[in-house]
Amino acid sequence: MASPIAILTLLCLSCMCSSSVALSSTNSESDPVPTPWPEQFHSILVMNYNGILQLIDLWYDWPNGRNFNIIQHQLGKLLYDLEWNNGTSFFYTLDSNRECRSAQLEVGILRPNWLDGATYLGQRHVDGFLCNVWQKVDFITYYEDVVTNRPVCWVFYTGREAHVMTFEVGAVLEDAKWQVPAYCFHNVTHPSLPQFSITSSAILVDGVLTGSMGL
Ligand SMILES: *[C@@H]1O[C@H](CO)[C@@H](O)[C@H](O)[C@H]1NC(C)=O
Ligand SMILES: *[C@@H]1O[C@H](CO)[C@@H](O)[C@H](O)[C@H]1NC(C)=O
Image (cartoon, rainbow, N blue to C red; front, side, top):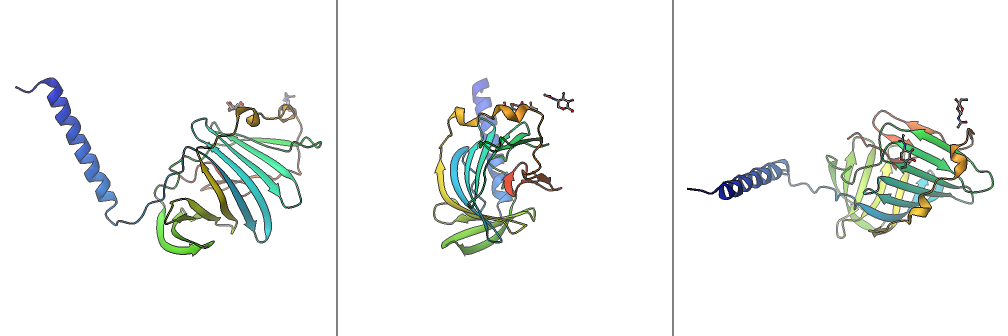
């Protein structure tokens, strides 16, 4: 007579088998799939939008439910774009202008697996790297290095390009740097700051990748 533990073990084994069958059948076309983002990383991005350049320090921190884009416009403003997974976002400067705009978005930050379900387009050379290329809901084209599986570049449907210059897996910005300045909680509006622009399939904050990508 089989012991309850043996029966449980059998049940679990059969679960594992059926899920592996299910996985292999969904991958039957054997197209490569995008590598999920690490739960925490730091990346320096060069953004190019028709020759308008920005340097972005991106701190992605999924376990703590937060995402930070520190955006240096060429010979211009240094802007801080801090997003929480509850949808609260702040966009501010830390200079004497003390500008801040906040928004309550309906979605939080991107999930590490936000590229799931993207359409595989094949391989291309981008920025000098051979990349696998995917498209996500007509909104973004994503290029990943075939050799290292690191992101190399992504291009928004608007033509705005993000080129990945560094990709430090596991890097975390210290808590004190996530502090929003007090003037963000005063009743001041700053029309000079970029508007949060919301589209039906995705949310863009000044063209920066954020929020739910139609998941
Ligand atoms: C979202 O989280 C942040 C950080 O914990 C907090 O400051 C903010 O008030 C929260 N927003 C809402 C709507 O709960
Ligand atoms: C901000 O302004 C709104 C509308 O004028 C007002 O209802 C609210 O109490 C103000 N909040 C603060 C913190 O002053």
